[in-house]
Amino acid sequence: MRRRPVELWIAGALMLVVTGIYAAVTAALDGIPAASSLFGHGIGVLGFILMLMTETLYSFRKRSRLARWGRPANWLRFHIVTGLVGPYMVLLHSSWKHNGLAAAAMLMTLIVVGSGIMGRYIYTRIPRDSGGEELPGGLNPAAVANARRLLATWHTVHIPLGLVMFTVAFFHIAAALYFATFLH
Image (cartoon, rainbow, N blue to C red; front, side, top):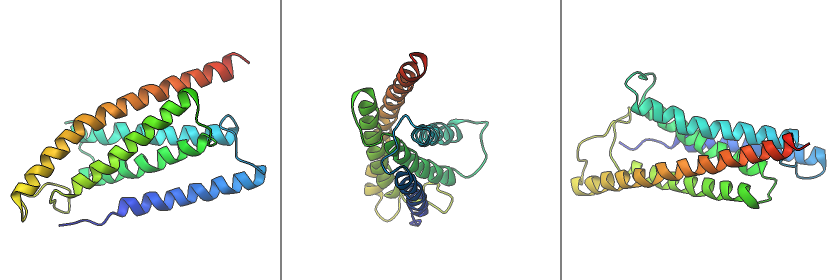
């Protein structure tokens, strides 16, 4: 049973709202808001918090024996929404300037998001019930087995990429705090 990509519509709608707010602020300031401005920091911090939620909450729900709240399929949808909206907000935070450590963090973010889009595509090739649980075999068991192997391989790449991205992002945040806060 193919499910509708409701999470993509939600993410798109939220990104349109964020774009509208960004456009209004840009018009009010008569220019692109600086990354170091109150709005720039605010959108960057909120985007980064969404990215942290993307990484931690879905993984915790999926792997913990204690966390059994909500259906895994809904948590995957949440993971996809926050995994698209958060990086978009961080991109807007950059003020379209990409140099130094911030550029490395943005590049890693784009790679992780691209990898996530690929993983979502692979995930949809495996037949599932309405709760997100895998169904046995499907119409073509060999294709489903290949998709499962590909998804397992994808996981071994996507997760370390995410860890590298967050490591670089934390260095960027630490450097920004040091140079913007402690040196002034």
